[in-house]
View 1 (cartoon, helix red, strand yellow):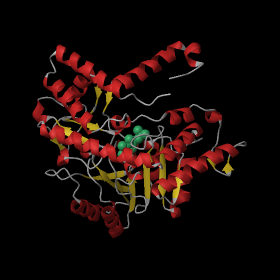
View 2 (cartoon, protein in one colour):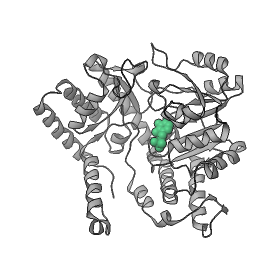
View 3 (cartoon, rainbow, N blue to C red):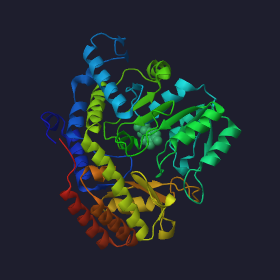
View 4 (cartoon, protein in one colour):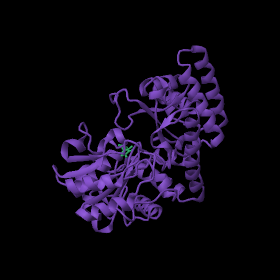
Length: 414
Ligand SMILES: *Cc1c(COP(=O)(O)O)cnc(C)c1O
């Protein structure tokens, strides 16, 4: 990283940032929700746009001097519309959870019934978990995946929907590796007159690159983070049909938020510009090829993958037959410089703090330029580490191998 002022003015902060850059460069990132943004996205975030207050929307701001901000926000909106074939886009949400809060506020009243996927089956906290605002404010009922196949059974979703008659159905997940039947969800919602809400936080990049089906033309409203497979800054957007534009905008501001983060809006515009390029399509395709190569190699080595494989960028692995649980696997792998996240498996016998599985994904390693061959290598490191978790010597030698692999594929940086 090249910075002129920060290292001299505040070495304490600078050293921590440098240490984190080193860690990101030396270690393998398999956390499915993470990625590395481009230097151009980094640069857009570090701009004077952070200095400006811009409550309101383009042409209708509550502060003067916003003509440039109007331009950047409009550009981000136009690019997002093109990327997702959206009728209306709001680019102001600060992150995924606040975006979802705004969606609920736009379509529901507190106490309304909503149908979402169970957290331990791959849903997100903001889809009705009891400790989250969503579970406290709204009356969530939940569907799960089929216990045998690990796949969402649309017939059972339909049964629950017809019985419970929710006002909204939420589809979209944090830990589910199969294609989602958007049309099937919409058909069920049409039978009971429910709103459809897709949260594509994890798979937005794959959808933008047309590697997975796009719910935006089908569903009433869609939210996504911008920092996962979409490879933009930490933030979110909401897309909806034109007829809901006003209520969605009012829910974001003044409903949920004050001023938008304009430097982040600029970085979103840059990321959307990158995602519109042909190279991004290739990138997204490679993410999926890498995930499938990784899943095959895990299964070849006797690991059980929920649903038996993957159609997207991630997989959830049940470690039950490997003699350890998710938390220990996370710790052992951290010692060799491989980051994964512990994960619940459907109907997990263990508690959420130490669930039975781990979730891995390929967006970050694919950004580094790694391909199928490196995926097999990474799985071999993981397998050796988990099988030799008590051997200091083996773990140290694996850490060296991980570092060597990483040096062949540097992270994009400034
Ligand atoms: C990551 C994620 C979110 C939350 O995003 P934050 O930016 O961390 O608030 C919401 N929904 C889903 C499905 C996610 O995977």
